Image (cartoon, rainbow, N blue to C red; front, side):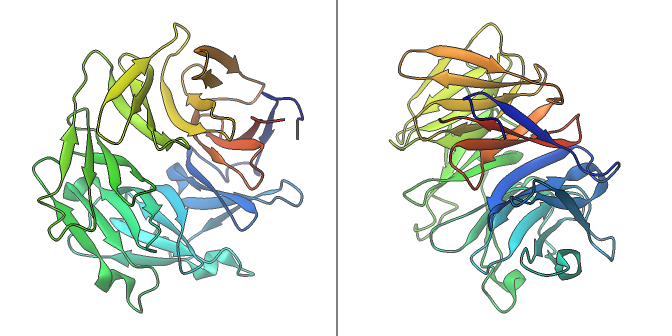
Length: 315
């Protein structure tokens, strides 16, 4: 892998195995991702950077969108096209054979998924117009599923659980941000909504810095929004931004985002307001970006390129 900050490496699967990769996450020393257009999940092995993919033997996984480690040791991912949550054992000799689907009559169109410190998995269900939770450690995880509905939830998509345990999400249908407190006696009544901000664009994806501020990419216009715990926002942009999507904050507090249409990974330094863009052969439609097993690099999906990339963010 490249050693200089901004150095990019791209890792390719065998032909046809990855199509429009979306979500990405580090787990068990490897990097896992979803391949939404062909119903697979995959990983990049840290030992040799080999790309592997896994398909459900029963063909039940359709449109896997986002993936996250669960407290039960499995990786859980949303199946947008199957109206289901699914799990896979990353330590199995044959991970594909361990894929299980978890459905519920009220669960439709799950998109994003994250884990809370309590062990619960939180997810957005766009088709259900709801935010939900599930305990992956339960004997019957589906029996623990709980959906929270509110008139303030509109096409929920990207989701984040902050250090206080509050659950935040993007309302794609209203260009706003939602928040709920799971510790509330009635979380549905405690749902709050912030925005919209027409002058700042429509929120897309999340990250959180060490001070607890939330960073969101925006579209129309493209930019980067900061939100504190009280919902106060500020916004900045650069003329080179086109369609920023995934975002993450590195250990030195620099904010990195994937600009899909620009085929670039962009670094923003909040301390001085500088923007830098990085690209390389094979960077094609970068979409989601997250830390890998080594904090010195971030990993991203190339949605148009059908590949996985990494970029060094710290020396």
